[in-house]
Amino acid sequence: MTKLRDVVGLYVDPPAHAIVLSVDEKSQIQALDRTQPGLPLKKGRAGTMTHDYKRHGTTTLFAALNVLDGTVIGRNMQRHRHQEFIRFLNHIEAQVPAGKVIHAVLDNYAAHKHPKVRAWLHRHPRWTFHFVPTSCSWLNAVEGFFARLAKRRLKRGVFRSVADLQAAINRFLDEHNASDPKPFNWTADPDKIIAAVRRGHQVLDSIH
Image (spheres, rainbow, N blue to C red):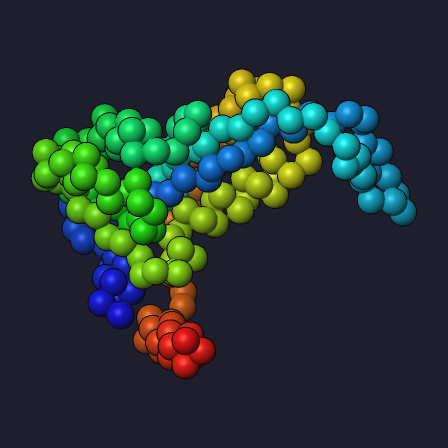
């Protein structure tokens, strides 16, 4: 439970003179072009969308949610290997003011622990990685941003190319950051969360 306490501690009591970033990727976002226009929302009838569509490729959104102010740094990339992850880390590094310590909350995806990523981390001593426990990706605060993106921009979107999809994602990022984003507010009792996770692990252990 040490990892869990570590991550929750960053959310509840962020270190002074530092920023806490929740970092993850939303991969395989599809550029879907509906083959027929949907029926618009009308009194007494919900809007509809055809289930027939053409696929025009995919993109991966790398995103870092600043827990302290709610802003998001994002970048679209074609793939989500360790190479792209390092490029995104460099992108963040260039945007965070010098002198700020950076705490990054991450899941256990293999690319995040690649030897070249560890080498990058060694060369950037102001960074510290904090990995959420296995099967606890819901602890990563940026997942809430991904859910809003999917609901408000992707679910009913029509994208005729990957470039069109990426432009829509970038507009959503800009709108989010310009519309008075809110700090991430952890409201759950840390001890109750830890107890629930421990019970879940005990159930899984009993099954195996």
